[in-house]
Image (cartoon, rainbow, N blue to C red; front, side, top):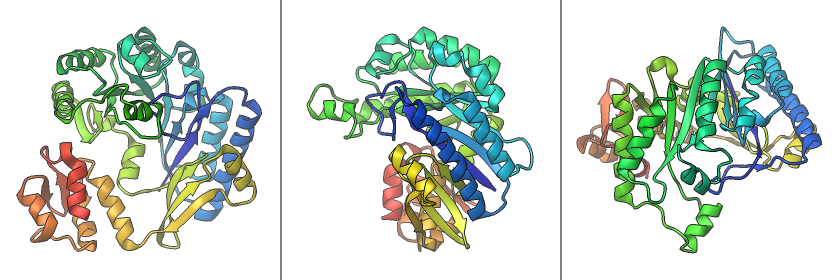
Length: 377
């Protein structure tokens, strides 16, 4: 099976914490039309490269793909279904922001074929939303979630915690309020400061400081406690679902090491070509991507992964989930449960072995980066 990720790089504004490949959505109608045409052509070229394979899922990310013309969105979905006929119903996810303007488009997006919406709520108080550079208010977020719940059978929201000055008590109250909105999936992310972003530059100048490690850890534990009590399982480090059916099918496909196409500027893909796991990266600049597709060269990078590199990637992704990673992949890297770093992490309770799989424990998940570093160094 084959999943499809499409990157739509346009945003109404650029958030100060964002380091994704995005541009402002202003005066770019001709460019956007050219990009849609290039994406459709790229989809055709990928189909010729991989041959017929059933479509597993589609994910429109960005950027803000809810700004995409619903007719253009439908054309991509229809072409993908025609080129890679799915075996049955598939998950088609799209990221959106909870502005009133975008909420007005939800019905059209659903008619285009989207059946799962992932909404960037991020916070439920106006001061925090202003700090995060968001262009919606808390009331708009609540209204948009209500509209989305009527338009889409599946709904997920994103929230950001460990914001400056945030306390455990305030986060508990905010998360508890959010649960009343009625979504089935939530992705709570700790605010991460990337050096190339506006926040990164502000922190480097000493304008403000991020939460210290102890407070961030307490906020993480609060997240787990509140969501677990509400019936949400942390099936991945930053993703919680109210039951297995609410999990993101697309993300699970990727985390399990499945093949996926990456279309659009800067999109990453993973394909098995001639029996070899191959990593692809599309040209990052919009004009370069459009020109590259026209020249039958959409990728800035294409690399065949060695068996060890492919195994390491599956381990890095798999250990983020409750399913864990295959012991066989660890053995490919000469990691044994009876000696060496894997044995040490098992003995210390950071990892657990069940059958032929290794998974992070409740002790290991909060410090997973360190666990992976010790395991794979």
